[in-house]
Image 1 (tube, rainbow, N blue to C red):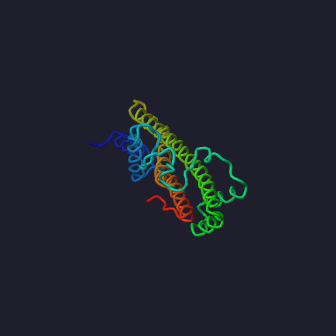
Image 2: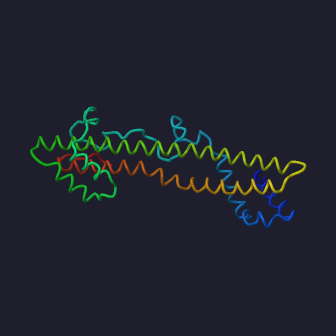
Image 3: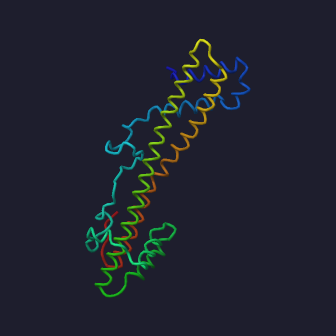
Length: 240
């Protein structure tokens, strides 16, 4: 069975062509664009809160399960980190180092050298410096990851609103088509708007996979940095 949206859009295009308005709408709505438009509409109409893999986070659109906070145990087997140490402000030298290490533009080769230079001294000094450095990196990168995940959920909510707008636009087009005295010009206008809305929606949808990778990259960065610190201490890091 042909979906209702397809029938209405096809009828709209035929009506416009017959009425001589194809010159105006033809520049916007080709048969191919209509097909793409309908495909996106159908995808949009399937978006429901149940899409979330975890019902606790209905706005989380990623295939990766949402883990609100990085577990220290998953990245660190060195000296125990107390809660107060995670909140402790770093000294200016360490704070500058954390910024450089947290930035992905700093290669891991350079990061290892910076860590080795910082985690130096007696055994006790190395342990204290290692703990302090890891705690600062954990706080920084975990906060960055949290900010990114909040942004992803805001993005997801906007997509849901856009999907609702697309459905509403389709409803208006159906009503216009079914009206006894249909207004072709108004139908043209709504159909043109619909094409642009669905293009924007689809472009944003395609970017979701890339956006969803960012929290994973941040977690990997912390794991790699923690491993480098632990190797300097002679401690085996957790297995990946």
